[in-house]
Length: 254
Image 1 (spheres, rainbow, N blue to C red):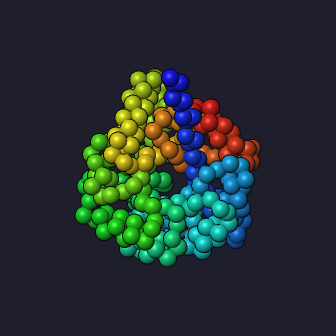
Image 2 (tube, rainbow, N blue to C red):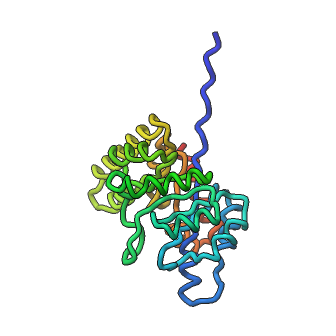
Image 3 (spheres, rainbow, N blue to C red):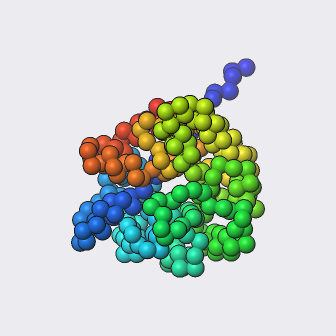
């Protein structure tokens, strides 16, 4: 008998968060640089999706950006949003491909950790249901912990995105080798748990050229979302080059 041919590994998708193009624009006012142009560059460079986070204080992406970005390319739009009535109504009005529910505090510089899906079940359940009933693919941005994955299961979320901040911080520690291994194991174990229970796992936060490959090598992960680092690198090499290089590193890891 001919042995069954092994399937090639599934391509790991790259979602690019373009929030900080808008941050630069807003620092001076006006309309330059335009996040729409960034979305178009990401599309040409091999990105698989566009992520934007419409914050309560509109510190970067603004309401009028959503429709423009959504129509700028054929890439799916992932709307990061807080679990508030305002953001639910905006999501239902714009109908992005996906909505990733994230924790949000006005005073934070960036998202500081995962959503406590386990502790906020009653608050999240009607939001997840409304978005899902409208045909929006719901994702929960959570820490790689069993209780959070189990909460996502109970809520019926089809996707989770694991917060990789602890892994990224461990990579920066002078003697962080052991902690890096621990965080990678957590990510791998929780990605496997998610898949076992019918949830598609993604990951993101703090990923760079230097630390992305061990995460990209986790076979169960289907997508990485990367933003701040790529926009920072774009200052020096251009956004197209930054996306192409990250795409290559992810592909090589698989």
